Image (cartoon, rainbow, N blue to C red):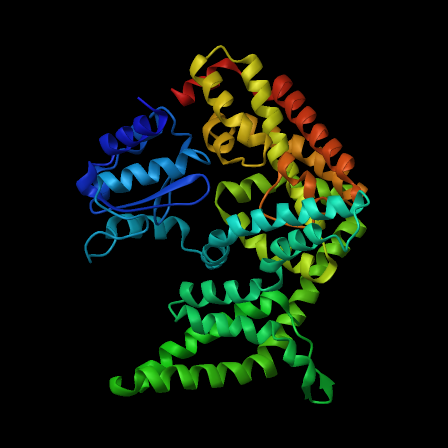
Length: 453
């Protein structure tokens, strides 16, 4: 049987069969499932399915199978269940027992906020990755001496730069959708922030600046658009809803955005970028070590997506994000730790898991290693973080930065700013090395492999 067939059959066997699956969706590495009866799901047996690298219980059950594979598994599983990807079967609610149990563990304001941010930006990651790599390749060509007026280079820059120029529209769309509003109205919120016509307006004695506040302003405006739309709709007669509700919503939110929300977003954006730059300038190696060393725990709980608007604001305001190259060391430390486990272990199953997850780990996709190797083993997760700290300290001292987001590891090399490609790569090697050394000497004992059986 093909790998994806084995995974699909294992999922069906341990989740109550195809009739119990209510919704199938996926992100880059995770299959996201909802069920009619969550009591039929056997988590411990599901983790043992060959090809399953980890299972995370959240408002959806997340089965980690890795990039590429997840697309095939989602397609096959949804077909067997008579669903299209993302569709919900029937109109009943997601099993209340699952939602209630998850809320008890995860319903904190900070975590809920970061989940919202993740839901807004995760769908944009493929576009950001593609555009970032195209931009990186074009920038590399320019740095290599290619004439900027060359037609093919100009075309690449148009293709790669388009999403970053108009990203506010997509973020506004997703923000309104996430908060229960009409996505098209959210897109208008994004247009309000980036509209070049703003520079022709003088308000309170100051000329308005297109793009002021960046994505922070877009998030505020998109949220407020959804908030106002829902409340206005409650007061408008059904027969007039299609006309009055969007009209009043856009008018009220439009004025509020220009007068209040955009300046507030600008204040937040300036504060965040200034704060992080100050920490890196003052803290130097220590700040880099702390940031890189604590990033894997954020990935573990899915809160790392909350940093996406910060990276993008750095790119918007400074042209590159110094934070991403530091945080990318977390995945590199984990790669080094996994190699040490591979060298030391006698467990063939563990060796196979490491071999399957390492290639994408080198390319910056760390979840298969995280949930399949280091986290279940325990101590290697800590030594991976320690290895990452050393690389993070190096990147902070060397002041590397990235021109784009969406990738890390070796895949990030084309996006490194100021021709510091080798410096960034050297930081990766440092994290690989120290992740390996810490894990080999202190992080792994053979009895730990029993946790994966």
